Image (cartoon, rainbow, N blue to C red; front, side, top):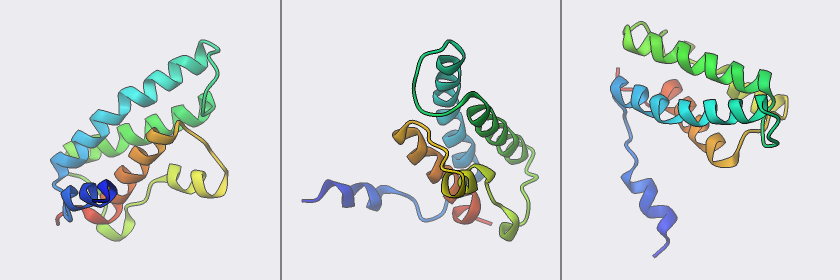
Length: 112
């Protein structure tokens, strides 16, 4: 059995806003840890300004979600997704996967 497929089956097709908040809450500590490491001169993925931009954007989305003030579905985009694609930003690979999943949930998988 291909275990990769098992995970896909467990993933939800539609997410609640509370799921989005939970996902962000799970990923912010990872972003903060990377940020602290860079500030302390510990080498790794991501520059300080990039990690700060990602953190800020996640916090912004989280706040809108908590206040139930998300933009209309067709207007939900994450800037960091663009930077990964067009500016070659790099973050720790598992963190990048988490961030892409959050972007996907925010952009198109939330229940209306």
